[in-house]
Length: 81
Image (tube, rainbow, N blue to C red; front, top):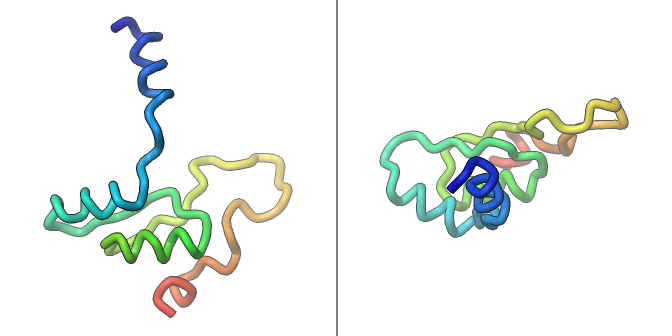
C-alpha cells in the first residue's frame, strides 16, 4: 500500500486490550514493561496481565499546564499496595 494507505490501516487498528498484553507476556520470558500508564486502575491491570514494571507516561500529554498529566495517586504504593 501507499504511505497514506498504510497509515489509514494503522489508524483503523483497534488499540490493544488487556488480554493482548497478557498474551504477549506469555510469549515473552524476560522482564515485561507496560508504558503509557496514567491511572491507578490501569497500573493494576498491567500488573495483573503480567507486567513486571510500568512506566507512568502520557506520551507528551497536554502542554497547557492545566493540572496533572497523570493520576497523582499513581505511585509504587498504589500499585503494590
